[in-house]
Image (tube, rainbow, N blue to C red; front, side):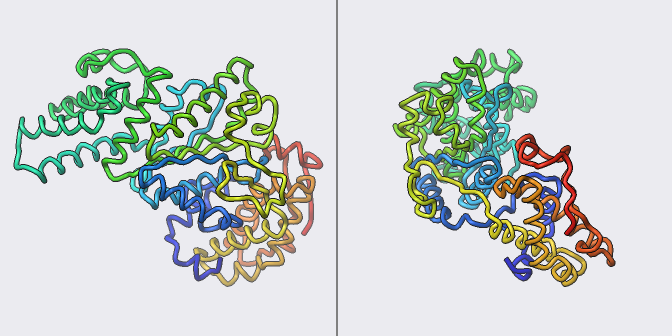
Length: 439
């Protein structure tokens, strides 16, 4: 990436990326600005997005050790999906917050994290409102109607669109119908309650549910019907599909045995439903460590699931097929880490008061030296270094060069990696609680 290319980026987008790196987190957007080593996946994944946008379905399992960039790749893919018009939802699987065996909870997190290119999470209400607007426009295009006639025609069209869903989950269309009626009647409280119920939320007022003719809360089996309904609504309001990311699925290995079995079976059920054609427009992506895919506490514990995820990794990684079920991330080596640092340095410089000073003081040689030093401080494990490396580069070096005209990192900065700023995996790799490496 050159400064000229970086210069075409908006200031707000650049700032969002740099601020996230300064905090040591993966940016929510703008990942294409400094993505390295993903070209080998881009063509196949773009094909999958196109397939989903045409009413198909897709699935990929992203595989990599800690620090290899699984979350980064998932969000990078999410940006591409949004550009194609798809909605996106990224969920972190966890034992307490989002257990995989409770699909009703997974669906609730899905709607809470639902985003589109124009609406941040949660975009559920905007999507539903857009759907009703699209239905009204379609009805008005075919006939001149107003008042009760228009309401009746829109409800009739809604029922036709949701016919497949209503056969198994009639409550979904009932809630939509109740929401529209509440909106038109000016009953904001009922409308808000029904949107919350459509999103799988609990503790919705009983009066609102009675008004829509629904009862109870969403359960494990109803969640799949709600997902089917959501895909229908998305498609009709201009979003041809949904990219659903289940991140950190390896947490299943750490839960109680019976809970693990249920979680693995829920994943198998999702894959079977995708294969059966129940979810047109769904692109499901999971991320996990090799131990999850290969270990006896992970996918191998459920043979039918292990068979669906099986991928041959006996060849050299450079011959991995990007169309395989599992996509292997090989992590960073020092040249790639340096390339990443140069991309971030150029992105930073493009928004700096004095771009020339940034690229002169923090030249390619220094970027490479810092990469080597951070890696050495983490036990030589390049794979887990990117997060710490980028945080040090931005917060400790680039910010100081920008703010202080006489600051020279080669003279005035000694890399220090404190145990308190490392994750558990990074601390276990570090050679000491605090590493002082002069550059």
